[in-house]
Figure 1 (cartoon, rainbow, N blue to C red):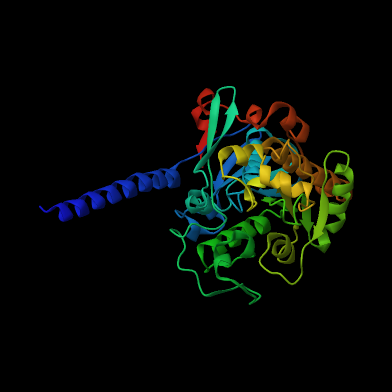
Figure 2: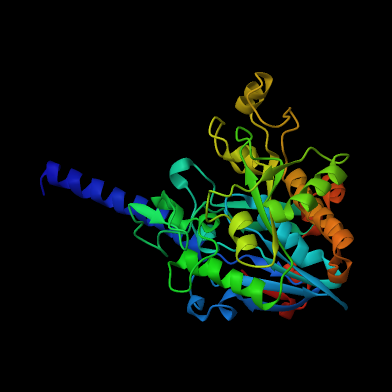
Length: 384
């Protein structure tokens, strides 16, 4: 074999090795199952396909955790992972599953409403494949995800996405964005069918409140806030007032002319009152340093600090950053505050549950409220 031919063979072998190593990591990430401990309040676990059978066996046949109170009351649905890169919503939902104790009414929690999106990330953007939350028994490992449904599960995208049922034209990639596909349709794409199944859950169980947990950039004005349509606005504003002594939060109106959003379509197509919560996540901003696990969890970045000093951010920001404890705690306490205001206005459909919140997260860390899967009855552990 000539030296030239040998060089080609070596290059080909190196390329195959790189593809093999990289491919194996992505395969492992896609198939990694996160352990979730069923807390004292969980009475049953369902699949989203219960509400729309065609989802059975798909990547978005997400787990639905049901916590039923001893007393009859209203019902709330909490959605995490609409955008799986916004990890505080996922962790807040899991903390609820593992710790919440319902007293009155029922709680439905879906930590990974876009489970497909959690099976792929943005390696081209330097995103980590996983993140780890420290606990006293070791680190709990979670998948890092992408904003949209994994193209392995839904492809190709159209040139223009036509929202159903309004016919509004949206960007092509939004057809894989859970938060552009509400209220969904039964014979649509995987993403649309996921929204349809969740809407069926809302209707079947007469869910009163839907809370969609998100995070947003510090350079984006819709952050640190509650987004609500007009039917939910009074509760949102009163929640903002009641939380003003705890942390900065404001209310944003749900736009009437922008379709597909959870805080718009859920309220328009059911009796439920929708709310979308945005916590500030520095990792999502573009002008940052490397997209490391430390940035994701600690939320400290020198470039955002420089931007903050120039008044370019929409939130207060200093050397303490925006930690995962702060962001998860905000979501939990804001959820509880929304329910308190709901209960004041609708005592005939009260929803009451106990759960750690903002100050517990800041004092003890998120890991203090994640249970050890190896130290409980295996029947009380599921893999999501």
